[in-house]
Amino acid sequence: MTAQLLTNLTTKTNLAKLPRHVAVIMDGNGRWAKQRGLPRIEGHRRGAKTLKEMLRYCKKLGIETLTAYAFSTENWGRPQGEVNFLMTLFERLLQKELKEMEQEEVNLNFIGDLTPLPQSLQQEMRRSTERTKNNRGVFFNVAINYGSRHEMINACRAIAKKVQCGELAAEAISEDTIAQHLYTSASSDPDLLIRTSGEMRLSNFMLWQLAYTEIYVTDTLWPDFDGKQFDRALESFQQRDRRFGKV
Ligand code: FPP
Image 1: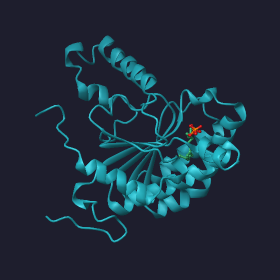
Image 2: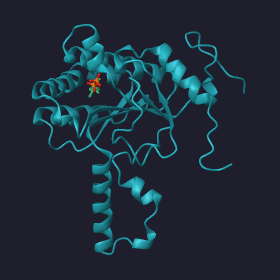
Image 3: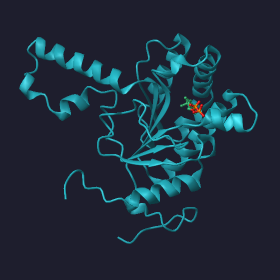
């Protein structure tokens, strides 16, 4: 089939060869705000808008899943005021955007250890996942209090318990067994990881799941990452020769 093109996409984007799952490390909110003489929290506010636009764009293109790294297990080390602001922002966004997400057929899920989060936020999370669980328009995973090593430790513990009680033989542990015990058991592995603001690291994000993912790093700060930038990332992805370790 010849490549179909959407009018607002650059002519090089091939809709027949899109990633199924895009993951994003949304970096540079603080620097974006600083460059404008604004408080860091303003950068997060703008960053949330960018994320909403990206989710819309994914749905429009037919990308099945978007996973966004919103708060890492290390982010608790930020100034208390910024942590509190982010928790309140997540909660308000869930309250404000739920209706629209329902209408737009978004299936919302959270990955991470949610238990240390404020009770009122956990409640909003439960409500929004429950209300969107039958949607199939686009799958949206938000990583909050997420750390990949922590996720793997949890998986090891759960698998070890099954071995201990005789439910599983140690020799039967496979890649699938591990994948099924991660927070992401319901998703395919990301095909494309985008990291903004030029940092060349994974920052404890989906270390297992990113084994064969194509990585795209841009100097653009997250609040400035728009549709055009996303097209560029998709074009770069489409030029890669994905061999998965084969020749
Ligand atoms: C990284 O930029 C950004 C964050 C840690 C927060 C990201 C959160 C959002 C964009 C809100 C999304 C909301 C929902 C509900 C998913 P940084 O602060 O590390 O920037 P810097 O490196 O320039 O300091």
